[in-house]
Image (cartoon, rainbow, N blue to C red; front, side):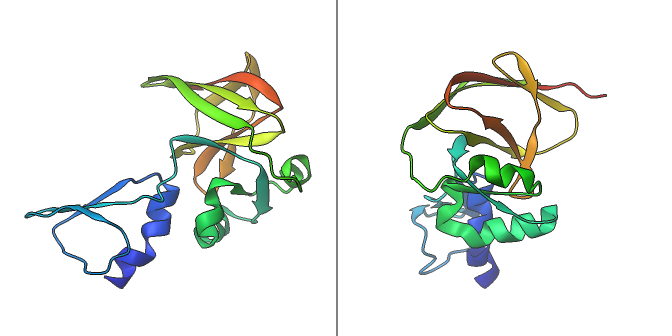
Length: 171
């Protein structure tokens, strides 16, 4: 039971909205939405499929980035952990900004198209596992995909409205 609760932040990081189990957990801290042979718990802290972060923290490896991200808990929606320290100076903002949005336009087997609007430079986090072979373009221009929180895809976006396209093109 303890390991189940300890993992809820990791589940949130991966965007897991529902936890399905045949165990009943009293005082689990997450709502039980269906009781039966199989119990369904709703994870209200699950991160969305795409979101923008305005602050970055550094970790030297993917493992330490993941560990650090899990420790952020409530701050995960505003802060990402990267393994590239050069990005830190490009994105950390002292002033909170509320003007940002993402909208998934299209999802196909080997591609994703996302509309992004932001008033400051941010990191678009795509809640999918970072994997070799994915390429990204912002407004048709090739850009780098960064590993965020030790395992997710991230694309830096400048202020303004943009179309971000990710395509899987194995080499």
